[in-house]
Amino acid sequence: MDFSVLQSRLYPGHLLRRPDTRLLYIQLFVTHATCGNLSGHSGEAPGRQARNFGNPVHTESMKKAYYALDRRSERWWLRFHPLSAGIDKRIPVEWVLKRATVSRKNSYCYFRIPKCANTTIIKTLVQHDPALKASIDKSAKPKRASRGLYRAIAWSPESLAKRYFCFTFVRNPYTRVLSAYLDKIAAAEPGNYSYVAATLGKTDISQVSFPDFIAFLETGGLFSNVHWAPQTSILPIDTKLIAFIGKVENLQSDLTLLINRIPGLSPFNAVFTHEQGRRNSDALISEYYDDDLASRVYKLYREDFNSLGYSEILLAAAIP
Image (cartoon, rainbow, N blue to C red; front, side, top):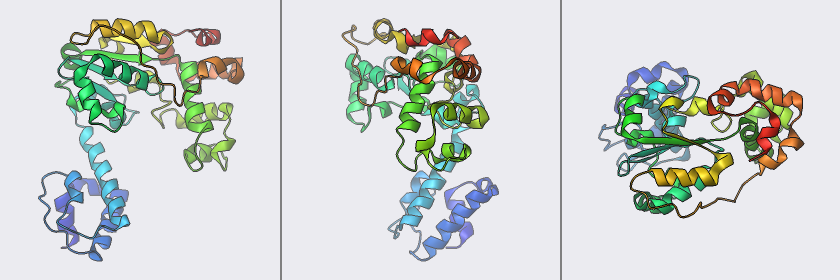
């Protein structure tokens, strides 16, 4: 099989306009030449079918090339999903479309914002929604059950808000960015988040302090990772269209209200908390912040403070 045939079977030709994508194809083709013929591919869908050719000899390099092409193709197709229209252009669409829990049976949609008690909320939903529990039981990770806005039957952000009870939970930006730092940077395994250290001129992520991290966000890193991107930027619809916005600071009372408002769920019983991996950032505000850092964080997350109803006053972040 020649390279042009391989290309036509796997992905749309226009994806080859990018030099890095062409390089992946070349890697796949050259590796294949030493492994055997790519036979039996149906040509039905890009990416997903690419790993199921007859019985080729899959070397590690082939697997890596398939995976990279698979992800790139998926990202390209997601750009044309109708619900991507309302997503902030600075944010990769897959960050948003994949971080949602959709119940078609009970007509609700939960937009999961990282570092905002996602696991606790999902566990609580599971205990009050038998349909969600059934899908959870089939999933290795609770957050992956019923995940993805592409499960929703809607053709625009407005139709999504009309068809589903949309809700989310948000958090004070002061504590959320500190939680992201403690979890992803201060506790990072060697080699992880190396781009943060490199941007700051550090040789290792363990050398990055909280003030260093804020400097990284100020120099272009704010939208580099979903765990510290502004909360309003990773919501697929305008906050005015969201039926319920709970706050992590009022988790018990807000989850009680939420469960009792969604039709089809059993009456509220209890909040099922998730303790593993908690960094207790609320109690560490005074240890990590001074007035200068607070001012800089406010400027970075001004839209979150204003749209989500949080005070600029740092002390308020330490008071549940």
